[in-house]
Length: 143
Image (cartoon, rainbow, N blue to C red):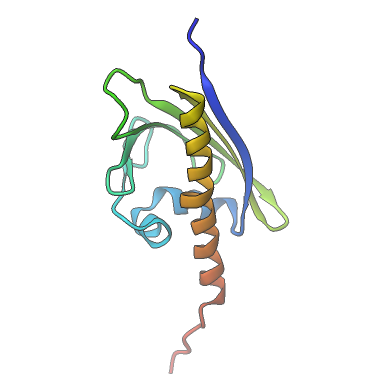
């Protein structure tokens, strides 16, 4: 029986579940918080790429504001390594949204740990910075 390695976390993002979902599925918003090009075909079995194609996969769950899932395979993983699996659930929280992330089927504990840090450093923290900046941006008055 093959061993599967998993990273799980709950992270509070300072926006509504719908806004968080959109920030993970709209290439323009992804570019604003994450930089780089992304591709998201917003449907089950749709193609998915983040960070200039560093990771690729297929969408497996798609319920706006509720659930998002996809396969995940970074470009440096060997062809023989199967993609890992990302599953996110979005729940309202007084500060915004609880994102419950389960990223499973890593080839090693080292990859699970590295990706766990990556989710915080390259996705959730920058996304929170993006939402805080949106709230602090001055509103332009029309004349």
